[in-house]
Structure formats: structure tokens, C-alpha cells
Image (cartoon, rainbow, N blue to C red; front, top):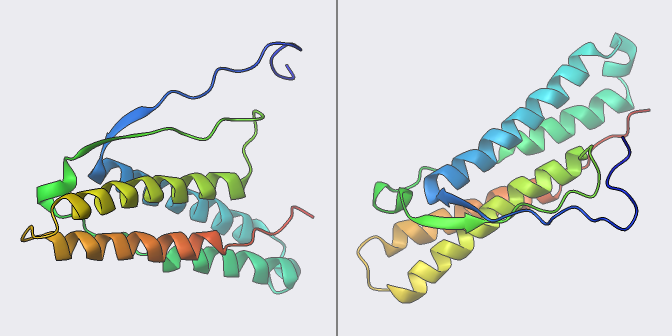
Length: 153
């Protein structure tokens, strides 16, 4: 099947409710799954390709995904509720780049929630911890946004 019939569009994705902890954990879990997929691809390449340009490109992408460290979410905000709307799917197969961009988008949603919380409660005793989590999300987003996925051939 090629997709919806002409004239019929797929319904846009519905917003999904998450806790802050679930959203951040989910982003890193999905990125880790993508990293594992790339590692498997690398490991299954013939040795001459592993040592060549393709292997190097895969190793670089794997390293960039791994460079983003999952932060600890403070207990006082881990259960904060927020919604995240996944990106609409234009086709059945979603590229690796789009899947990693979705992970970044999850962290952007978490970061925006935290920034609003900091604006509303700047004197809160844990505001510095919240800002540190914002910075950790920024670091991961920056790493993931620079990943270049090699082509299949």
C-alpha cells in the first residue's frame, strides 16, 4: 500500500501526555536504539568497508549520539505533566535523521517546560538545578543536530 488515497490526508498526530522524566528518558532511549542500529550496521559491514569511509562515517555518527549524556531529572519535577506532539509522518518509512530529530524535539519540549517553570518561579530553591537540566538538554540537542548519517551505498 502506498499511503492514503489521493485527496485523503493522514490525520495529524495527536498530542501525547508525558511526565518530564518520561519525555527526557524516552528521547535518550530512542536515540540509544538508533545508535544500536548504526552499530549493528557497522558491525555487519565487510571488514574493508568498516575500515573505509562508510565505517568511519558510521563511527562518527555513533560517537556523536553517544556523546549526549542522559541527565538526571530532579525528583521534584520528574512527575511534571506536559504534552508532546510528534512530528507528522509523511511516509511509512521514517529516516534515521528524522527519528533523531524527533528525539531532539522531545528535549526541546522538555526544555521549554523547564524554562517556563524557571520564569514563573525564579527564586525557587531548585531553580539552579532546573537550569542545569535545561543546559544538559541543550548540549544533547546540539550533539544530535550535528549528526550526519551516511547513505546506504
